[in-house]
Length: 329
Image (cartoon, rainbow, N blue to C red; front, side, top):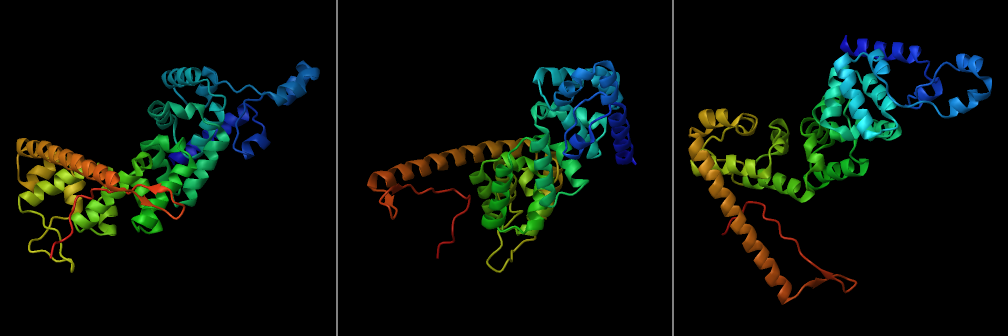
């Protein structure tokens, strides 16, 4: 019902402002006055006005779109500061997604860069997300939660998607679920993103489906390591062997990651806040020391000699601390 009402408002608003149908079909939304009225007022300027339509938002036009007076003032202020030339077209695209004025205003406040978007770029990025499986409903939630996805280059989205599929071996559907539930990873460092997967897969023994279900990628690597290591030190979590077996029953990953810190401590770790915070500080210090050792070892390797590729060029090896060590036999 809400989507229908929003789209009806947009259609009514478009009709009142007599928007050019060709521009709308291409995803653009210039504010054009009725050409017949312009011709009657000044026939010699009709062609000139048609070629250069007014694209600045006004308070009255925002009220026509369904914004309240307060919302219209905030929206107009943001558009004025950004000096965006395609704000009307961008707002139209968001309305046609089924977003209401209140949600659109929140999106603009979260990510003012949207004001400066070109309408063509926005439509291209939205279409690309749809092709990745983010259909209506999922797309609206994703944009509302993480509006910056509308300003990220398509190339960046493809890089993250390719890493999840080719290096982490998630299925296409699983990648779609990850992006829908954890769109923030689109800005995460790719090495850290892969590191997080490796930690969960090798160190914790968690499989792909469980990672997706538990929304693994919402947590930072440090938070993931702290919660897991704390349980392990308390004897409440054990890394499965090669057959996937453990001597104890590990808590489901969703009970470890998808809950608040208070719930995690009282229902899973059975510990106090003070104990957990002290442990996390010690864990961070330990990781920092390991990082320095790895950096020192890497420098030593470089001094001893670097590998060369087929062209005779020096190639530096990257060693990532995945948070686990192979079994020594």
